[in-house]
Image (cartoon, rainbow over all chains, first blue to last red):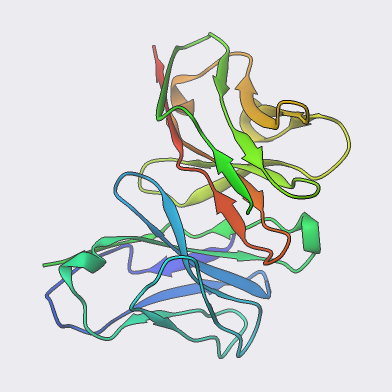
Length: 114
Length: 113
């Protein structure tokens, strides 16, 4: 098991609320990622970071934002949650070894917006 | 553009039988290929990867994958399936331009006792 943590594991919240999904890793990895996983399985990259103060948007457009103030921490924020945000959110990290880097995933946060 | 395809949404196999989960890829340049497994209510776990070298790659939990350049395939295999192998399996390829992983759509493996 990799040392990457996500909280909360499950979250049910009402429309319009602001939420932050936490992700932290203790491996000292420079690269971190957020994926959104559809109920039908497919993974979509929504944000990634190459290191502190680096954030990039992924392949799937998302209304969420991220920050990377510390190496170990990569929180994802939704300013105003909507039912369309209901999904599973997976955080991952990898070390910067070029072709050898392997992504390690957290357990995920399952978000339900009512 | 780099991509991977997993042609089967679900694979069913009896316990003790060999299993194969298929993956084909499309890349420019040398492919860097990965297999991940996702158990229920868990994140993805790394199984194995191919970067270079032997075409047969051995990974965790008794899984292996065979890289076939002529068929552009990277099928996941195990000689004898266990019920506990039942999970979602994702093939992925590394995009050389962005260092991002491009995931397939996933294959659900169901091993019956």
